[in-house]
Image 1 (spheres, rainbow, N blue to C red):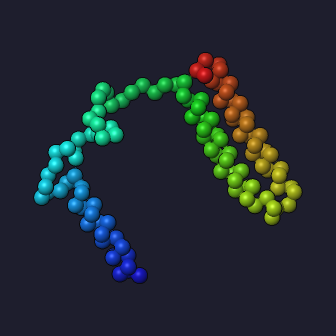
Image 2 (cartoon, rainbow, N blue to C red):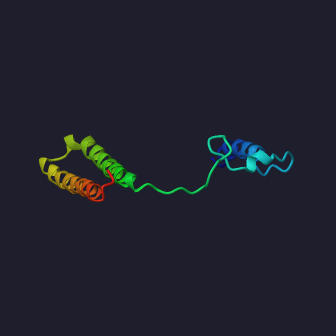
Image 3 (tube, rainbow, N blue to C red):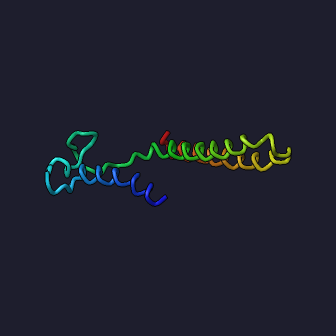
Length: 112
């Protein structure tokens, strides 16, 4: 098993060593430059974060967490008793309350 691991990892290590920026045999000054999608960057590296997107970020996180738990719950719903719907209803209530709070904050701060 150890031999297979060595044989499987050795080519990846050799290839990464050959194309790494610290290649001593063939130095390439372009590899050390910062790039933006293959282009030389223009402007400052740090930009101001727009607070109007904060509500979108909150909504995404809320719906993402909700989708993960609903998928796990929905995939086992046939094997669970009917009383298992009560915790998921409570979970959905908490998630929708968080979503309502995010909407309220975005309207109050006039960012959406």
